[in-house]
Structures are given as C-alpha cells and as structure tokens.
Length: 225
Image (cartoon, rainbow, N blue to C red; front, side, top):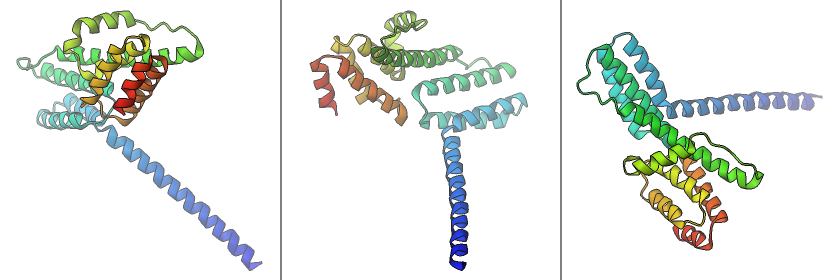
C-alpha cells in the first residue's frame, strides 16, 4: 500500500516538474522573440518619447535603434519596413521641432517600396511553386508594374529586393539560365540577407527552380553546394 502511495506521489511530483519546465521553456522562447524584435520595441519607445517632446532622450534612443537595425537578423524585407518606420519617426520629430534642413524625405517612400517589392516577389514565387502542384492560376496584383519598375531601377535597388525578383524570374522562366546564375552570384556575395528562415526559403526556391528547369541549371546548383 505504501509503495503504491509513494509511486503516486512521485508521479504527481514529476507532473509538477514537467509543467514547471514547460513554463520555463515557453518563457525562454518569449524572451528570444522579444530580443529578435528589439527594433520594433524601440520604435514604440521612440514614438512615446516624440509625443512627450523628450528631445534629448529621443535622439539618444534614435541612435540606439539605428545601431540595432544594422545588426538586426530580421527578414530582409522587414528590415526595409523597420527602416521606413525609423525614417518616419525621424521625420515626425524634425517636423515637430521644425528641423528640416538635413532630412532626406525621399528615403521614406523608397524604404516602403523596397519592403513591398521584396514581399510581392516572394509571394509571387510561392504562388508559382504552388501553381505547379495545384494547377491553379494565380493573379498577383501589380506584379507586371513591379517587374517594370525593377527593370528601370535595378541598379539602385538593394540586393534584398533583387534576390526575390530574380527568384521569381528564375521560376517563371526556367529555360533562361541567366536568372539562376544572377541569383546564385547575388547570394554568394550577400550581406543583406542574414535571417536563417529567409535563407532556407530561398534555398527551397532554388531547388524548385532546378526541378522545374534544365539540366545545366541543376549542374550550376550542384557546383554551388
């Protein structure tokens, strides 16, 4: 009888221990997520400081946020979104304090455009990959306009946009190996894309391109690995 009671007590304690460990692991995941979103957290701080007119602290936190942005491991398109938000906060601050002399307002729409283009071409690439399986046609709004814009402005666009643009072209035109070669070269010299999930998604797209494309494209991929 006592052995059964002892066994039940141990089982109960183990359940408590497992529950406690699970809570600690979940908290750890939350902390990791919070650390990865340091730029987003600081943006909220900047907004509150600006609203309260705390000029010196705002400028100090702005520099801190800009440094965090440079070291950020966020998805490359979201780096552009964060930069857009940083530039917007800076503009609001300069407007509020009537300091327009040194502010380049052109950066604001450009960073938002970079974010949109990267996400648009990524979504279009995913749709193309899925289309091959589902046999369903997808209509991507503004895709033709985006392609035309990149063709006209390719030299001044960042790698983080061009990688997703070339990924889409390589999937859309598998017989044209120049897209695949350009994409491979961009990735080899890449410093803009550091997010591991994004790099994994691009690698999967490269594999899909090889499956869909020609034998030479497959050989290029093999030599790159």
